[in-house]
Image 1 (cartoon, rainbow, N blue to C red):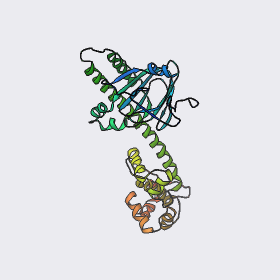
Image 2: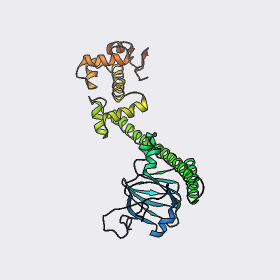
Image 3: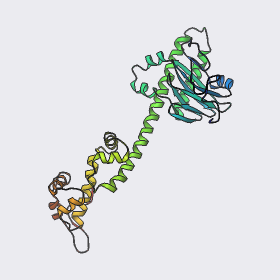
Image 4: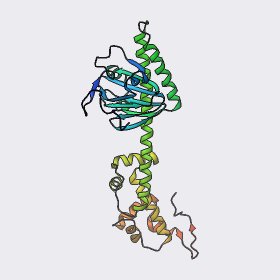
Length: 314
């Protein structure tokens, strides 16, 4: 694909991008929508469709069998069976398919898309960017059936109610495609969020004795403080500030129980410049002052603990 003409429109100067209705056609779409197999047009161009855009068409491609690559505005992506490709109107794109690839291409006027998604903000947002997603088995089965029905109905020219049926089927494809893209985006966001939280947990173990603020952790992780706290709340129910505080107080309990360091020294070890501030934070989170906590436990010579307060975290 990288050695092909995929990024150049046939007959155009290098670097230029052609704008088509359908690929290779300059006239406006005369029908309520357009549906064809991937092979129908690709085979005419050696299975390569050079870079182009559709100013007024929103396209959905579904690969049933075969493979290929796509160039979307976000970059190159590999295509395999049960892959759905969403291309909004105006986005530059190109394709290279392996010979014999089977699937469908559905082209919808942007007016129809805007009308049908007017009351679906989640789907509208999901379908506003070019993306390729691998479908789950049930979603793939549903969409393959719908694409097949659209193609069949599209070929029934002159049949009563054809436009109505096509509009309904096209809307159904749009709805299921939007749902699949939204779910894939949410899953990707969750995966990224999980990686950020794991990195935060490791960083917290390194820095909890420092006076790092939430903004310091966020900067080290390459995210905003708001985003980091949103991830933390979603996973634990607590903001980052509480997680940092809880880790510091957990260490404070251990230091008070297992060492003879003064309360002020323990606070200084944990990044508190003011002993009074450390005592207030400890009392708020642990339910008693540092001295009261230390007095509630004993430390015999054998190192075991006897008492009613457990120095370990709950």
